[in-house]
View (tube, rainbow, N blue to C red):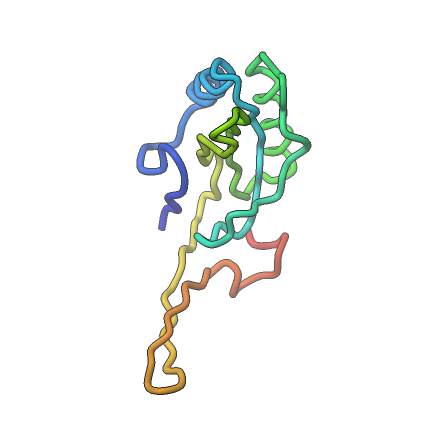
Length: 139
């Protein structure tokens, strides 16, 4: 199952050259770029681990590509994404986010159904990877 979060998630994986072009676009808009990674891409896990510090005032996409390469070395089988943050007044939010690396095997999620008080049904989405291994050892 392919995790689909962020921009370009329904397209084939971007090449490094395409990633560099997207980072260049973000920088041309004055957005701060950051690299994040996780081994639990659950849809509600919106807080991934920040790799280094956000790259404010960086004008060269090569700096982001260097940080991405370093993150890939440390997390060869994890999920890695790039975020662009617009700090301008009125926006102050993440305006672009896309996955740039994913594990070869993505085990996916399952829907757990439970009956709770009053014959109500409660649904929970759980990750097969989280069930199988502890944090830091999932891929």
